[in-house]
Image 1 (cartoon, helix red, strand yellow):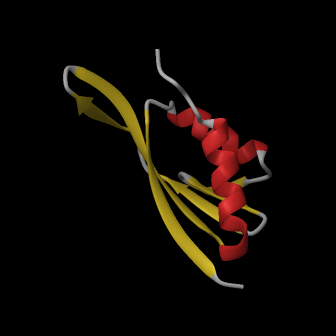
Image 2 (cartoon, rainbow, N blue to C red):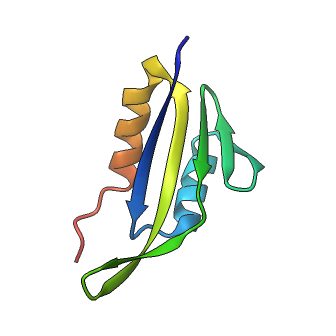
Image 3 (spheres, helix red, strand yellow):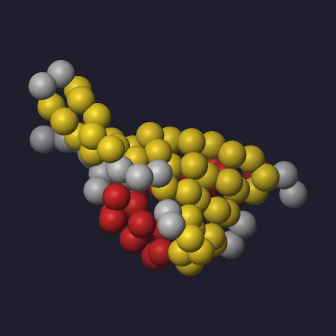
Length: 87
């Protein structure tokens, strides 16, 4: 069982939606911004403002620690949940 680490920067997603997602998939909050689930751990950074041209959007760094064999499914489900086309 190999644990791997990956980070994603999520822009335009409210921090609380990220927190709620990890709780709904079986995670438990074990510290400030840290969630532990079956075969994974996630750390959410504090939210900050990111400037894109004249727009300011919120951004959060999401750091995953997960079993290597579970990573592709976890990433697929995470990306599907937060898929957005803008507008």
